[in-house]
Image 1 (spheres, rainbow, N blue to C red):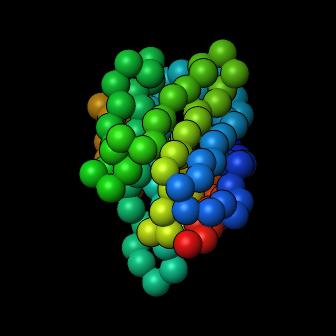
Image 2: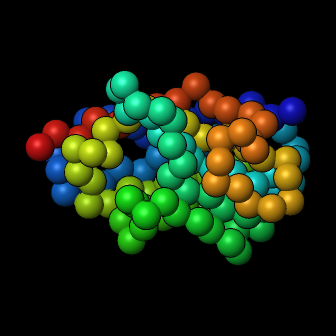
Length: 124
C-alpha cells in the first residue's frame, strides 16, 4: 500500500505557473505508475496526466498538453506536475494517484490509491 500527499497548490493569476508535488510513502514507489487528476466544482473528476514506472512514458489530456509536464523522481518517491500558462478553466482540486498495473492508464477506475488533493485556483 502507498500513501500519497499532494502539495504546491494555491492561487495564481491567469498566465502564471504552479508546481504540484506528490510525496509517496513506502519503498515500492517505482512499482507504481502515477497519475494526476482534477475535479472542478460541479464536475466529475478528470484525467490530467500520467507517467510510467520508469518515467519514460507520459500521457496528457488534450486540455493540458503543451502546458503541463509530469515527471517523477523514484529516488525521492515524488511525482511532479509543472503547470504553465494557467487559465481559469484549470481551477480545480488536483489529486495524485498510484496504479499498481503495468500499463499506464488514463481512467480513474484503474488507480488504486489516492491523495487528499490540493486546491488550485486561477484568477482571471
